[in-house]
Length: 237
Image 1 (cartoon, helix red, strand yellow):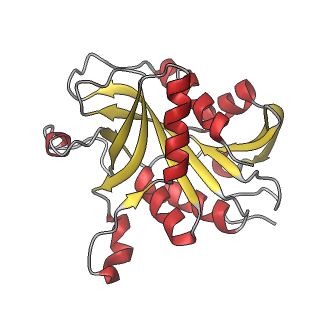
Image 2 (cartoon, helix red, strand yellow):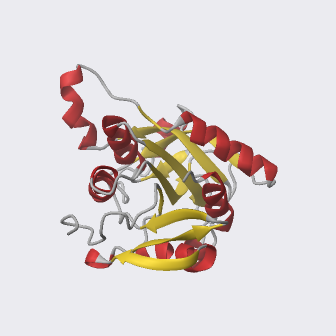
């Protein structure tokens, strides 16, 4: 018996789950990098797989798009399936001129324009969502060892993809925010609430500064090998 959104059995997931947004990307990661792969869930075509990477048992599962979607899946993985660590492996647009297409970002912090944080209003302030420090350090060191161009810093986790104000991103850029995606805040907040580990790794696939710098659909799905290998190398059993 699974959860309302995952039909895996208890024990089907490893302690570490890599979480791209796209179900096809989850399938690609599992088939490309893991051995002895088994698909363990397929509710709503949100595929999840468990296999082995260099002898380590690792799972991969899609999150879908947006904070409500990843919030559901990470909560169920952490609570019902006793997953300890979720690493989002996604794509983002960059706000900063020094960041190039296909560079990797380690998001140590996540800002948001989402209503997700309203559940914490009783705090009397704003909750700052951050990733696991030790995982972030390991990711940076692993990227450096492999000559990967990596940037560490803050990311915006947005609810809006098509913003009616085309210049709103500049306010975030002026605060040093590296770029934008749509899931990390909910992941980090849920991990904090449940006392679990989380990290968001991102591959840059477009630029708000130069709109001609944009990855193709095919590159978005399969051009993320450097980031995936970093996540797999630091995955904990």
